[in-house]
Length: 106
Image: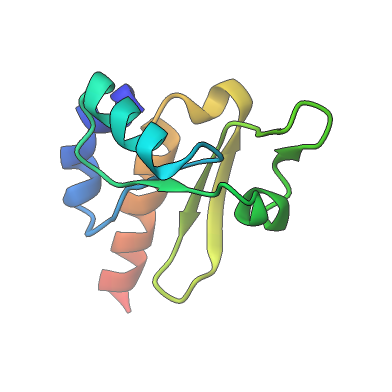
């Protein structure tokens, strides 16, 4: 998440909203955000609804697997990074850039 914070200007330039999602509680997410210095929202999926719906819930371990989703303003998933690829914001930023340019061309 620190890498996304460091590259936040790239996302803001493409009219993109960044947020994190965790199966941890709201207070735990608030403390974590403060500790790592992120300014974007960290949402709580304490009931594990979203991670199940998006197919990234690890049933055996009880946590959401690391993933980055780029979702357009119509709610359509346009890009997914999973695992270690999701740590680096580069491909997500590029996907947002592509979507912005497609929108401008239309």
